[in-house]
Image (cartoon, rainbow, N blue to C red; front, side, top):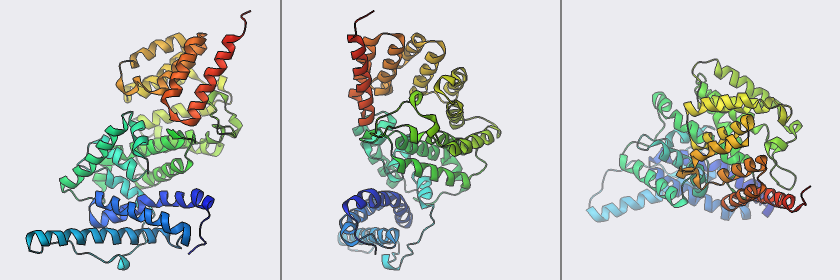
Length: 425
């Protein structure tokens, strides 16, 4: 048993450890009992027990084993209680799965149990959106609000979707177990989407006081490396890993010392991680040589073009525009259309970019999203219409739930308002 954690030590170390271990423990318990929803409840109880005991008693020498034992004990109690209830109701003993006492169970696991859980959550009883939402909750540890932001739907809608996903797994009677190689291949698109969204939430946190959540970004990269080791011939896994590395390479330049957001064109590029850029570029080159080009390879190619430019003004925007046009054909989405409009503006001028944004006005997924107003504010500023730029920057600030982004947008609006007050020459 280690020394009891201090308040700061608990916040910085132990909570991160629990976040990392939660999906691993859930994978063991769900695989053992075949009941995802009940397993999730048992793991939550184990986490609560850790929150209460570890700050007082210290973190156990084997924290993962401690959590597994507690969760299995809770799960075993639940199963026994259910059997006793049925016995009372039917006055007969139903057949039940033999149980092993938690203290006698093996608590050591394959370090990739999180990856196993990821494939398990992409269950055949679920639609891809439901599987992705459930997996983000179980594997990524994202809150319902964060998942709702990723899907651009209300939080209540996402809560209902996750609840229905759990019910669907239980009602399907399909075992919640490790998929075979063929099933892993079939579930891979959903798995990659989950990893992409976990990384995205880590790179640009949608809620709270911090712009980035490095723990999520690092875990997404780690799991993607593991997925590539599992399926080394898959070009899209390589493309996704390349995208993560090429994007994550900029993390040190994205915030000022006071957590202020620094946009891409203002970043100190000497702070970019050249080793990550080199690894990402090599992975992308390998992926592109393997045949058909997919969604993540195209996004990685766009990230690589940005990373190649030693100065913002050296960015090859015509090449980026061409890549976004191809991306729109391969995998159209509101965010792709939004980014395509930015590229159009950089090549053909802000008026053309604003014209492209009109296509998003009728799209319910993005019509009320802060990024649409933020981009409009940026393009109106470039066009010289500062009043409209201020209007859209302020509108975007009221819609985002990220404090650093909110502060950045309000700062832009205030800066332009000061410019407007200056006497015209």
